[in-house]
Each structure stands twice: as structure tokens, then as C-alpha cells.
Length: 600
Image (cartoon, rainbow, N blue to C red; front, side, top):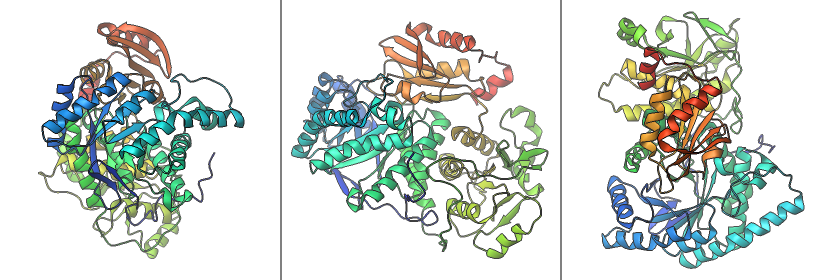
């Protein structure tokens, strides 16, 4: 395991500074350096459908998309990129195109003739997609790297000659046999996989590339990006390449937006990220306003406030999740802290508005009323207030005072660093309670997810208190959904669903809706819905069951990472998935109340 105690991924955890990078040009669009954070998306149309791809790309550009990615599964698909590019130019659109490559170096070489950027996945660019259990000696490992170099260098040279940029994009779900055997299914393995390819590119004096470290689990994604940036800092100033951010298989609706905001937003708040894609299991055009709003929200949260003047050692390891140790205590009949369930708080005003329908709220019930229970609110910059906590004989519930001129994220980091671990912490999304009923729910959702998700992913916090959303019901739902998305409190079925793309072998949106309808009452069951096998089995690392496109009209079903049912006709596959869940004793019959909660 890599030693992380001396690694740093940003200058300060308490003061915002955007990471300095090289400039990488993708056509006429600059990434990194002094350029704004760019918004990307991906076509869902079949790459062979020129008219469909051109039409969809034009719609994305009209919505604000600055870079458009399109899959190129084979050389034959890649050849049609010429026609897509020409079709866009004939419409007066010169948006940069990115060819998405998996498994096929010959497709990459063809695609690089027509596009402004090529994305390669180090996990499968020159490797098979089947994990083979074997141990690599150092000599065998070196042989593998030589083989990769032989396959990769021709693409590097072509991109260099044509001025084509590259993304070296690792996916948690598709690490190579070589990496899996040496580093395991870990953030470290993701980073080392990308660095292997980067070293080859640098040996050829090619520097027009960006990195990405994508995963469906926000904690894994956050740790991988932080570790990557820390390793780049360690390697030297000339390794300051731009970063593309994304959470794979985030899903749809509020859940997809929350999960994306946790992963992407937490990194943006630390100054990491030069281009982003919010991956939703929806029409791609819906990704753009969410991505734009996320950038806007994070820039607002990073705007100059009164700076924290100190830099204490953090209470957590930024590269490895461990929940902060605290003592358990009781509030309003609920145990909190000390490894107990993460609790949900609300204000007395919101509680009174909900009191008449508590029995209708199902899982979304408030548990503790903040202003009717003992919580000590402190200014973490004030030594006297911290000292007063130290002399308390018993653990107490602590939070940051409202109204302080501090950014919320660093304020809670400072609190956790300065108070004794025995005191449980109540997290807030904002230090300014909202009274604006007209405020954008999307923006409050993104802010709460980015701030609280970042803290929870670092192990800070024992309870959440949404203050930025004025509506009591929505603030409750948001509280629970953030806890679910970050894996802190599982109260409903969890779905890992990839966005549609040209590789998808069935209608993801319709299928996801059907599976949700059938299984949404299964509390604590995690189901992966994958359009193809590129990332499917790997991104199902934490899933209990998987529904994966195996061939046109055919579905493979998984238990964990193991495929157990093959080539099931699509029309039968949802019922067969239910049967599989029953076989493994994870099925319960839905009650009317459970179905109401699942659909909310």
C-alpha cells in the first residue's frame, strides 16, 4: 500500500486555490491553465447513424456543451467519425469531438484522423476484458509494459503529428489483469494504471493529454483523484496535467444529480478539475444544465470569504475512508455518534410544518429537532470556545455557528481538526438558513451534496442538518438521499446505472424505470444496470445483482461480479432478475407504504 502520510493533493484544506495546470487544446477549446471549467457530454446515438449523431451533437452544443464525446467501438465505427465531423462543419458547428476507445487500438488510430481528442482507457486499450488470476513477476510485468508500449506509441505519434489531444481515462470498473494482480481493485491501482500510459506518452515528448479517474462509488472516485493529483505533485512541476472529472453510472433523477455532485463537487471545492461531465441515465442534453449549475454553485462556494488563517493537521486521511471516532450519546430518543446510525435533523419550524403527516413520510422522517435539543455551536477559529469543549466531562453534540463569514466545507474541516474526537458533529450544508421559497432546488441540492458529501466521504460527521432548502419535505428527502448516495445510511434500493451511449444494447432509461418499479422497495439491495460490458462487471464491484447488455436484445445477469445467467431475452430479463434476487433470499414482497416511499 502506498504511504500517504506525506502526500498532499492541494496547498490547503482550509483555503481555496484552483490547481495550476498546463494548457491542453482540444481543437479551439482550451482546457486547464487559465481557461474556465469546461462542460462535456456524450452522444447516445449509434456512431454509424451520421444524421442522428449530428442532430444530437447540435442539440448538445445549443444547450451549452463545449466538447462532445462519441463512442468508436471498432474501426468500422471510427471511420464514420469523418462523416459526423463533416456533417457538423456543414452546419457551421466546429465543436471538438472526442472518440471514446475501448479494447481496439486500430479504432483509435482511425478515429485520430478525424477528431480533436481521443480517450483511451488504460485498463482495456491493450488488454483483454477477462480477469485472469495469476501473479506477475517483475520481469513479466516489464514484458507487459513493453507490449503496451508497442500498441500505444503509434497512437501517441499520430496524435502528436495531427495536433490531437488525448484523455488517459482510468475506470474503476475496467482495470487490467496486470494492475489488479499487483495493486488490487483500489484507487492506487487506478492511478498507477494511468501513470503507466502517461510515462509512455512523455517518453515520446507528447504532453497534450488530460487524466481522469472515474468510478461509480463517490468515495472511491474522490480518493482516486486526490491520490492522482498528489502523485503528480510528487513527480514534479512538469506533471501538472489537467483533470477531467466524472462519476460513472451515477443514475438518474435526484439520485444521479446528488451522486455526481458529491464526487465532482467535492473535488471542485478543493480546486481540482478543469473539465467535467455529469453522467445521467437520461437524454444527454439534460446533463448540461446540471453540469453548468454544479460549476456555478462550486465557484460560489469557493468565492472569497474570510480566510481561515491556520492549517492544522486534518482529522482524517484524505486518501482512505475511516469514520471519525466519537462517543455515542442520545438526543430525542436517538443514539448518535460512536458508530451509530447517521441521524437527520431539522428545525422546529420545519418539524411543525411536517408534524401533521409524519406517518406519511415513510423513511424520510426528521429524527432530531435541532433547536429543541442540546447542540453546542462554536466558531472553530476561537480557541476559547474550543477550550470550553475540552473541559466538558461528557461528550456533547457540536456544530459550527450560523452566520460566520466562512465557507462551510473548510469551517467543518477546521472544527473536526480542533475539537476532541469524542464529540459527535452535526453537519450543515450552509451556515445561512434559507427563507427563500423561490430558490432553485437544483442549486440547493448540488450545494448540499457537494459540501456534506465531501465531509461524509472523509468520515466527518454523525448527523446532517439541511438549512439551504426552505421546503421541509424536500430538505428531509435531500438529507436521506445524500446519506444514501455516499453510503453512510442505506434506507432504500441502491442503483448503479450507466448513461446511454452508442455502445448501449438496450434502452437504458426505460429499463431502469422498469427495474426501479419492480425492485424499489428492497431496502439495502444494490442493483447495477449496465448497457454493455465495457465497465459493467467492474463497476458492479459493490452491487449485489447486475443487469448487463450482453448482445443486442440479450441480457446477462450477475451476482456480484459473476455472470450467472446468459443471453436472456430482454422481454423476460426483469422477471428473471426478480427470480434471481429471490433465489438469494434478498426478496421481500412490497407493501403499499414501501412502494410509495420507493417512488418518491
